[in-house]
Image 1 (cartoon, rainbow, N blue to C red):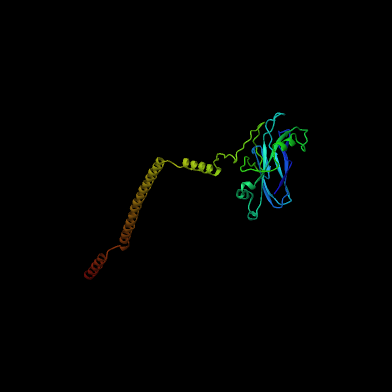
Image 2: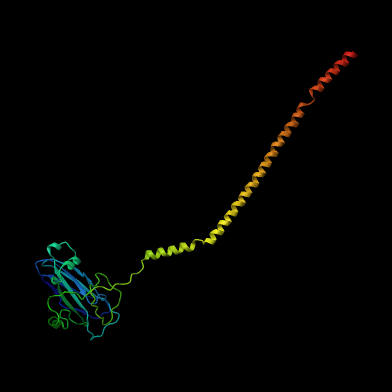
Length: 279
């Protein structure tokens, strides 16, 4: 298995007040598929797309390396201490359908091939094809390929631009894993807390509820008394109304009856006797 890297050293041309991009071409010259990872000592200063992938035999892939814009331009004679590491491992038959992370985790460390890539800062008129010190760095410090039992680089972000500005000469971070950041409270939990506090403040206190309950009971009692008074008045009015028609009926009956029958009979008898004795 062999992966060729072109160029062997990354040179970024000034000015650095804007984003600068370079391309690494990885070519698989072997007879079996390989997977790769790209790591760096300064993951916050670079963006790599893609930072991992798979290369079929005889194929190549381009990896874009973007240097984020710097707030302050480094000095002309300042040297860059950033480095990149390209790891590659062959894909065996039993891991043909596994992802890149699983292949690297399950593969023995002795089978992982690593290549280091140095980073240099170039003048605005420098030739990118032949960066300064490229030949010396390759011969003196960078072996073409070697096996390493442990990694000292960190995987940069993939397809995401950071807004943080870099320092003139950033110090390399050789930690194996990214630094964990303190978790931030989620917006749904904060919104729920705000809504709960608003509902709690809107609800009346126990004293207010007791006062409202006492006032409601007094109002109910007043309504009951009013209804009882109205019922008594209606009963009195109804009794008077019934007594009045009875009195009117009795007087009407007396009026209609006229002279009693006994008086009429007595008058008739008296008239008969007078007529009998005198006529």
